[in-house]
Length: 144
Image (cartoon, rainbow, N blue to C red; front, side):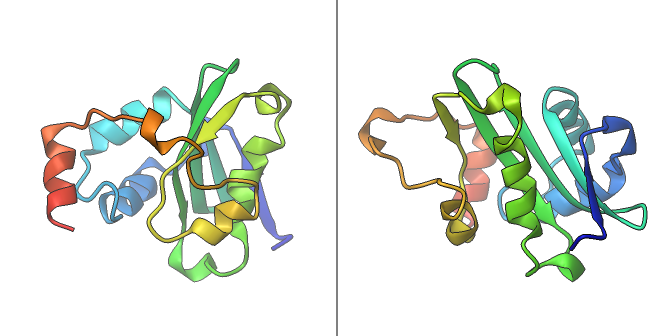
């Protein structure tokens, strides 16, 4: 995995590839490219590259003072199983600007072990949390 470079230079991101990954994911099936572009523009993004080709992506949304949300961690199918998802998520945790945040949240259906190894755990006070989801996302959840 030492031949994989991580970079938060947004100019390097392959937005077509990212859109394809996210549009095929369980959490954002069919997501519009414009929405992906807007998410990238308003997030701290990280790409993973092998020989110049993008093979991974993650983004963090934060006020850089108290809270962040880790989202859209994706590893290309051919690069899975090598710890790259954990490396992408861990990169954000290692950044000085996020080191003293009070809370970093995320959701996952199937990668709990990846995130537990980085110190994530189930909600301590799940009864404190609420969410407001769009009708579009409600339809996605209803179909799963």
